[in-house]
Amino acid sequence: MTTSFAKRIFSGIQPSGGLTLGNYLGALKRFADYQGKGAETIYCVVDLHAITVWQEPKELSRAIREVTAAFLAAGIDPKKHIVFNQSRVKQHAELAWIFNCVARIGWMNRMTQFKDKAGKDRENASLGLLAYPSLMAADILVYRATHVPVGEDQKQHLELTRDIAQKFNNDFSGRIAELGVGVEMQVGDETVNGFFPLTEPVIGGPAARIMSLRDGSKKMSKSDPSDLSRINLTDDADAISKKIRKAKTDPDALPSEEAGLEGRPEAKNLVGIYAGLADISKEEVLRQFGGRQFSTFKPALADLAVEKLAPIAAEMRRIMADTAYVDSVLKDGGERAGVLAEETMKTVRDIIGFLQD
Image 1: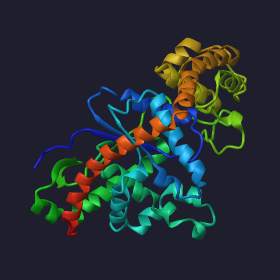
Image 2: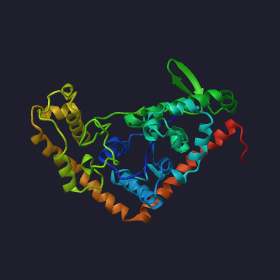
Image 3: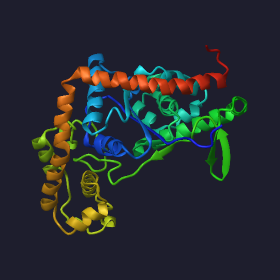
Image 4: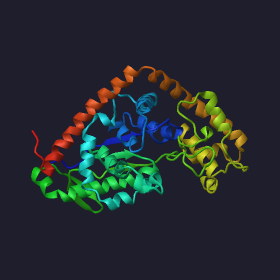
């Protein structure tokens, strides 16, 4: 029996429409930064999650390739990392069903995202939308991932992943001990033994949550009817610059300290974007621009955004034009992910009592 889990990072992005600056700063840039940091990294295009709401089939295929191209254009090396689409690895769905039988309906009903997405007509929402967090738990735990970079909006789902892992470990504690497949881990002040890790969220950075350029109280979203509300990863230099110049602000100068951003959502958002793109803290941004008007700050932010994002957009277009290459990356990644996932599932089947060869 081993005494600790090796560090393994898992994260995914849904192929449900165009990617934005929020996807880049909140996910893709962070993923690329993990290269060479000593952790095993697995990145997934979560296409099974996408179909919890209706997707036009041809558009879904295109979107899967676009997200893959974004991974690669952001600097993720598919030889050093595993990059694949979720539906290629059948063990995700297999473990999700097992977790459906471990998780409780009450847990799912409490999920904020389900309430938001289902709206008032909850009875007409798909069962998949309700069970979405159980599949997310399976995505993570089929690789026994120890860390997951997530945005604030996914933190509740990751807490549920930990609850599912802990309940599985408790429900089958005797069998796990009998098979000798448990790992010691710390839960509060107690050392416990279990098969699945209690995965830790990785939430951080100055741009963990990017808001709309037209309304600083709303998250930047590809579903917003106004294209000026977001910077798309496929935008060219002119579009990026235009959207920054037209971004909503207030009449006051930028403060010299971060506390001065409170109650100023648009200013806070633009400062966070600058910090995320420049790899510096918000405090450093305000030391540089504090006391200056947005007429000075916006052009500097536009230049920085064009410098960082325009090459990614160009590289995405180049990669997207070579569908055979994109598909080969996904195939190779799926095969490598499948080997790891099957190692986990063979043990899970034994723990539960399923017969297998």
